[in-house]
Image (cartoon, rainbow, N blue to C red; front, side):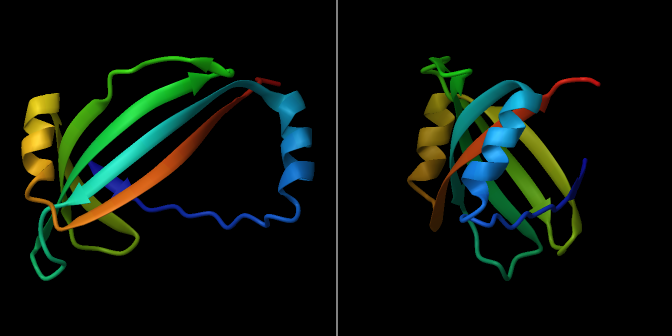
Length: 116
């Protein structure tokens, strides 16, 4: 699969105003907690990443205590690159964590907009 990198800047001063307007247009929302570990250096041809993604909230209700774990190989590139991904068990994920060089934690918010 080919990944196309997209990044967005958020003006924190305007965020409450924008979110209140969005509330009328959003039909569904969710929150994911993500932990990523990188297993190799940037000098290699492929980046090796493991990820644990926990879907923790849907419309303010707790959803799951079981994370989805995966291993991804990513080719080099800036805006577009190849990705190969496979699912890991929690045990396999834990084994790879012990060998990781770098960790990134983040929270992802998902919004689903109403059809017009």
